[in-house]
Length: 280
Ligand code: UTP
Image (cartoon, rainbow, N blue to C red):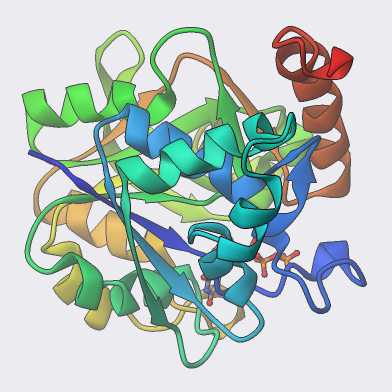
């Protein structure tokens, strides 16, 4: 049974400076809820209630967000404003939260390796909170957990992206074993459009089997001198099996300003207003 979900949140979020100078990128709000809470809610919906964060300097606001604020609770208890805390209260009551630090920014692969202290020797999910995934039915992680229960190997979520965007992603090549599910045969990190093996880009949702930790340890730094999870996953795919899943739903790249604005508008129109929040 999968129950743990790791959130690597040590990145600097330079694309949002100066907003992210003293505040974690993951705390930027989409309307009234920070990005990271959307990710945690998706994990809980998938039954992953042991949440682990790999943090860095300046990320304490994330810990405070998933903790009870006694002063605030006291201030608004019994007032008409109490409902504003409902969603975060229910997240806090349904999940447990633990934290470890990535001492040095050595890449996503290294950040995941630092998370071994929180994960131990079991399969786990990874969420990059700046990829917001929304859909009406089961969230992406819930879809992936169902596949994991069937196939018992590492799974990456992929999204089809236009050719002129492909250089920003890890890209897979694979054999389709059933509609939307591929056995990975190759992976390239941030390829030039003409070298990309497909238009299927890896997005920020993974399920990883625990042998990935030893594989990361053996993975030399790749592009930008960072330890790339894509390189480790390719090694894992060559040893055994890694699946790529074209998920059902819509993804917003909230790590970029354009994607963040698009997601904000979408959440405002389709979630915030429809929940009647605009009238309160
Ligand atoms: P990004 O490439 O989006 O980097 O990392 P970033 O620092 O967050 O944002 P920019 O590019 O400077 O604007 C992808 C994810 O991997 C995590 C980040 O926190 C983000 O969730 N990460 C990356 C780490 O935790 N540690 C690392 O060493 C690198």
